[in-house]
Length: 47
Image (cartoon, rainbow, N blue to C red):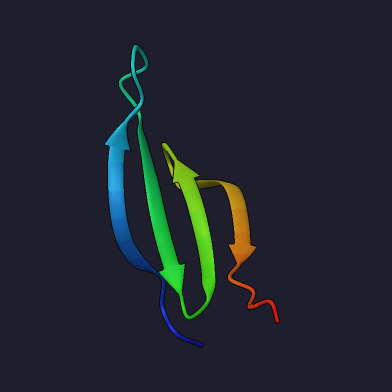
């Protein structure tokens, strides 16, 4: 299985934390703080 690739990061206003966007193949993940995943999705191709 391929490792997750960090695509971007952004500060959380008023929190001091950070959001991070990762990609692994066609999967995407948004994580916060100590690595907590808040969303995972797949890129789908429509006809």
